[in-house]
Image 1: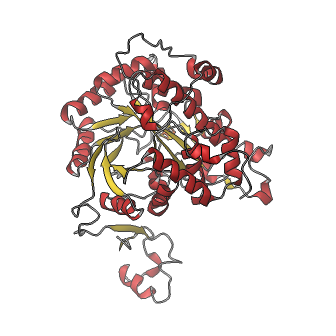
Image 2: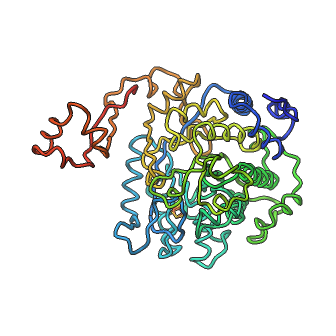
Image 3: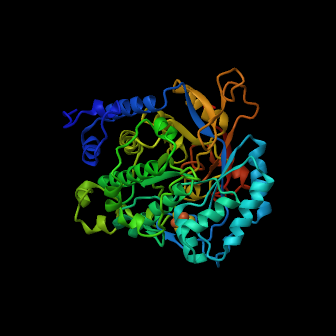
Length: 491
Ligand code: SF4
């Protein structure tokens, strides 16, 4: 690789902080292998133990009615649509009971942004869950939902968060982060909150004592520098929240206590501070929260409006980043992110976000193989062994992993799998012969494969008689949605 213009060892060892220009330089010039080595060294410094973690959780998408119209979304519906829904408390309770029955500890509950639900509906729901299932951690309602709640309920987010917290909300997921740059957000997140508002909700959540996560969506119309600016906003706001935070235990775990220039942060992100004011009390009665994890994943184009855009190629459209090409600026072409781009960005995030303790692998979108590889590119956590996921799967992603499979993926990287809770406390270390991945599997998983193209399945040489038999002698009428159960190889 070409010589870097800065001392990368100092960054890896935690003696220097990566600048945005240096992060861009790494993206342009460092090899993927070097990035993986450096990011792994940082992950090992921040998490110097044998285990890598996962959580057993369940996504509950309580409604698919949404006032926003994100162009990357295949999940949202209008009230009038025949398949729009809002789950009642009993149905949500059933889902939680299923989760508890497999040892799950947390729900990740997010909507649509449904303008017909009053604040009492949410408070009653939180109280219902907290009372009936006290062991369940409620990780719910992303910043775009809170910004819409401000509009729906005519209240400031601080008051809403206080009421939700009193009713049982424990932490807030970082959904809807996408890319903060207004140019990108205007194009892809139609009706969704601004980047400033996203960061403001999380600032207030931290000030009010709630932990949150941070997210980023890559591989659409964003420039690489906009990915890095996005990470810079998260790092700055984490500096701010650690400054607000009184207890230094978290900073020690995160590996670095930043020299914070709060005024510079306020000047850089004025929109994040202009509403929902906070006065640091002389004596803290609430321990502020922080970003506990960063997760990024690539845009999934299937079934989405943005997915109809053409794929960028340099010969046709010219250079992507910083182009003045109208097709790129207007979002008529997208630059998808494959495995290499995902891993490169992950490694840079590990090097850049020196004050965010955990980076999650995004196996839900990248699949188990790349999800596993992420542990060699800076991730220290596999995220959730999810029972249910609707938003990403509506856009074509279908990966779901059982606990034993997640454990196997972690163990194959040379680590001990460990179940954690939302605070990253270890609940169970799988270091004995009774570990889920070491026990024989009484029910080998099967997957449904949709027959979508007779030219590749039904018309294979020698298959016609079989299809004719399956479909009363009419091979050509074979139902294109027939499902075939196949064992998953290697499980
Ligand atoms: S991504 Fe979320 S906010 Fe955007 S349209 Fe879909 S459900 Fe609504």
